[in-house]
Image (cartoon, rainbow, N blue to C red; front, side, top):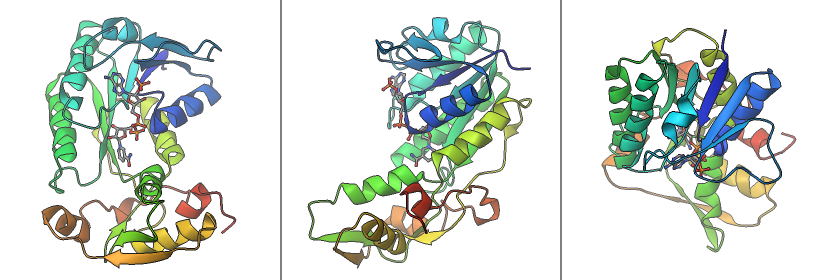
Length: 253
Ligand SMILES: NC(=O)c1ccc[n+]([C@@H]2O[C@H](COP(=O)([O-])OP(=O)(O)OC[C@H]3O[C@@H](n4cnc5c(N)ncnc54)[C@H](OP(=O)(O)O)[C@@H]3O)[C@@H](O)[C@H]2O)c1
């Protein structure tokens, strides 16, 4: 039985979906955020703190039986941030710690992915009871790739490269189930319902958003692109997500 769940990054894309899901199930939830609690109030607990600066972390962790670590600084600071959280958890009641990482993190040579793997390894060595889930790219991230190009006359999309995007609500559903179960270590990866060419997603995006631009497939050189082309970030055998990219964008298709 879970008494209280702390969601770090509870204000982020995944964290918000997870908090909604946990609240719907009647779970006692609190979030850790660097921001002050909204003046309008929220239907869950709010802890203001900063994982990188190690401020307010002990208070946030205190009394939590499960922690879902969704916070990210999108860079190297993820390592000290996670270490501060793990140390606080060890000083407390050694709660079950769930960490969300990325499919192929150990195979795609990106700095951010190396950081994810280092956090995974530190968690495994921490002595805490833990569960580690790797997910594929979120639909939100794919849309960001396209929206940053809104001023270009064409929409550039890497040629011969596929992704396996998943909706944060599907990841949240899975995390909520893992949070209610005993610690399981590394669990099978999770991906969205479809592996799709990025050019195909770019066309779907333009169509659904009503934009009349052309998709321009571009070759991307380098080791990172090679790893992506080899499919290191896909997990077709674990296509457990249910919400397609089109459904995420709100299309009827
Ligand atoms: N995006 C993807 O495609 C993808 C795919 C697989 C796995 N993941 C993983 O899923 C997790 C969530 O990603 P996301 O895209 O939902 O993140 P996001 O939307 O960028 O949100 C980041 C969250 O981290 C919090 N945060 C940042 N710095 C912090 C600090 N120093 N102390 C405390 N909180 C801090 C932010 O909270 P405040 O601003 O309120 O402080 C925010 O809630 C990450 O671990 C990411 O690596 C992402």
